Image (cartoon, rainbow, N blue to C red):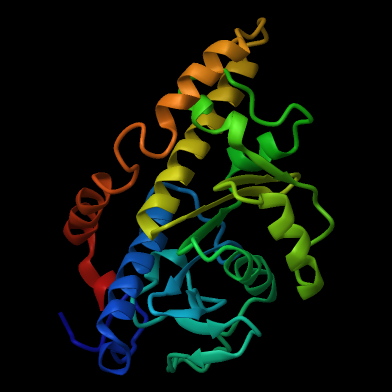
Length: 267
């Protein structure tokens, strides 16, 4: 592979020598999450975003440069941003396009990192299933085992227009509270986690639950909504410490899959 050609056409120099080893690892994982989002059909061109806090630098996080497609993100193409919106490290994009910080991405993700020291990664999507469920007054229903991972611990945030006003950060954070997944009503889905792999795993499950609900509702027949006692029993099996740490076991296999498809995310 040409050492200067990464990400299916983006030509960038590597930033590996300019960042710490732990930041580089975070960059690789975050680039992988973007590639996986594209692979599974969850991207919305350049409209959504995934982020990761820089390990050892609680006031900084990594984010896609606005204009880069998810399928071409690499570890070196990510912006490093502080909580005031200052870009601390920005790649030089040789095509001259203004690939910069997206205001809505900054507002949403900085809100989460400012409010929650335990959050190390966040993921936001605009999938058809996620947007559709976000537009339903009932929200996510306990129709499937997968849905019970989320329904009782799911936060909701009402849509007040695109999140471009930094003043809205407190509202977003307060609505999420200490939960790890949220439906942004009339908008999409949001997950946070202690790692990129955990936030991605939450999104996988939440997205699957939304798709299943829409498929069931489309059958135009009465729904078998699970009783609350069963929901609570099932939910307990998914609580932290009750079973394996979700995302941990799947992540190496997902990285191996990406390596087979296109390892340039690591550059």
